[in-house]
Structure formats: structure tokens, C-alpha cells
Image (cartoon, rainbow, N blue to C red; front, side, top):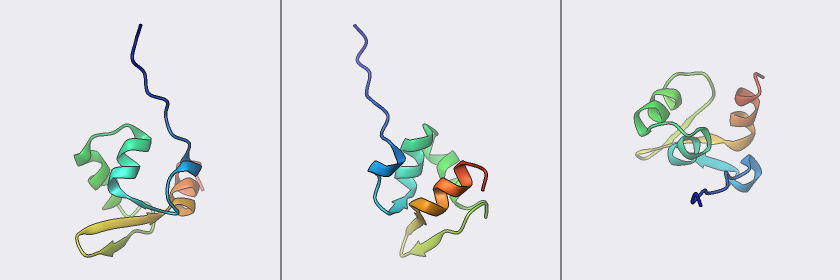
Length: 65
């Protein structure tokens, strides 16, 4: 039997998502996640060394908004 983990719903993430959350949700590499967070495709806030995005802003981008 395969050991599969259930993908988390976007609503299960904190209201403010970190790069690691975006990476996990999209199933992409660390480098691709940082590339996306630096792309300007959605509003990101820099807090110290962390890049943060509102879950709702991320949701809108994900759904083409």
C-alpha cells in the first residue's frame, strides 16, 4: 500500500503564508517557490529574512484573479 499524505486545503494554512507554505501547497521546489515569491505576480511583504503573502492574495492569484 502506498503511503500517501493528504494535501492540505488552502483554508488550513495561516492567514499569512510563508514561502514554505506556498512551496508545500503548490508542490514545487524551494528555488521555484522563491522565484515565484520574487516574481511580482502578487503582493509580498518582506519581514526580516522571510517573505510573506496573504492567503487571500495568494488564493486570488491561484484562481487567476
